[in-house]
Amino acid sequence: MKNDVMNYALEAANPYLLGPYAPVFEEVIADNLEVIGEIPKDIHGAYVRNGPNPRFEPKGHYHWFDGDAMLHAICFENGKATYRNRWIRTNNFKEEGIAGESLWQGLMGKLSANVNRPWNRGVPLKDTANTAVAFHNGKLLAGWYMCGDLYEIDPITLETKGIENYSNTLDSKAMAHVKVDENANEMMFFDYEMTGSYIAYGVVNGTGEVKHFVKVPTPGPRIPHDMGITTNYSILMDLPLFYDMELMAKIGKAVPVFRKDLPSRFAIIPRFGKSEDVRWFEAEPCYIYHTINCWEEGDEIIMDCCINPDPAPQKDLPKGTPAVEKLNAYLRLKAYLHRYRFNMKTGETKESRLDDMGTEFPLMNSQYLGKKSKYAYNQRLELSRTLRFDAIVKYDTEKQSSEVHVYGKNKYGSESPFIPKPNAVEEDDGYVISFVTDAETDSSEAIIIDAKNMSAEPLARIKLPQRVPLGFHACWVDGDKIFN
Image (cartoon, rainbow, N blue to C red; front, side, top):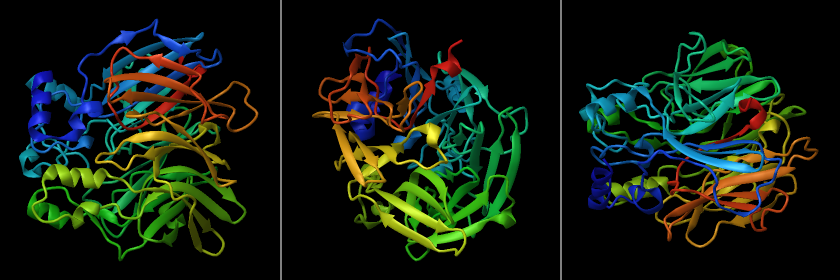
């Protein structure tokens, strides 16, 4: 298994299977970890990060998004830390386990090779649940970037409990980036289908049932990646990057098309609104992978996010460019901190770039989600051949200032949640945590940073028993919600 994957990686010269991206194959549990510095005693909970980790030799061209989901987590209790990692046992993962090999070609492969496989959201691709994690109503949830099943995960053991269908009230799939209003204990989600001209939107209540679900019509199939919420509204996105279904059928591959002649459109819907209640707003064409926060301010709804003005750079590559270089170009994000102001009274949209630094994968104090906030913790994009993060940038969007914590030479981090202190008074009373992988030593550690002193050395560096491959999204789960 391990040798097959690594031989494939070397032969294909695929950088997303080598070095700090290379998969690991052992599921381990380790405590009594070496700590440089001291773990703050008031940190109580779990840091969980999702990401791709192929188990079998890929078929066709491997895309970083294809890998089987593996969770890495570090739990804190009474000043001590325990690390563990575990694959998510999705239905497709189990099916390949029985076969002993990969059964799907991936995002850059030939879709015709998968036509006899189970289809997900209108395309014959494997639902890996490898994209994001979120915690709501006592359950840790993992999901897939193209809308798939939500898998319930034990937040301590990382055991896969199965597909969450909310007592059979969920009749759709759900996007990985669900939004949890911690004050109302409600979770908002959306869904789409590659063969359907709509974006579906739903709300799960605090008793674990889908209490609202509606389909918002769009001009054609759309592939939004994220959404936003305020106290009273949700923001859905109709963006001009999508798959041309006729082109996909013709060439047999998934090729995203960016239509610069179309605007970015935002559907603002009351939290429990109907499709006819939607207010549409238009802005400059772009693609948005991740929002930070949204809130209501007077007549306006404000949305802070990271925008990518040119999300399909591979289209400009010369004919005959190798598939690996097309992948590298596609993932070489040029994203920036951006703000939208949607005026609910006049219908006007105002937008402005808040910073010229390339950053993405933002997180914030989740207790403020949907309410006015000013701090964001973004990953700085290293402009190299591949997508990797070389620093955390703490933004103060009110003062329009930033503070940077650099991981170090040849060290790359993970999406970094904010950990609030108990009884915190200010929004940034707390810590920021990240898995950091050293490409030179092939090792990893977890670092804890004082959120009020980001540029200082970490308060603690926790040595991990194995390397954590570079990956996708993470969350912090408060200990009072998971430890009995």
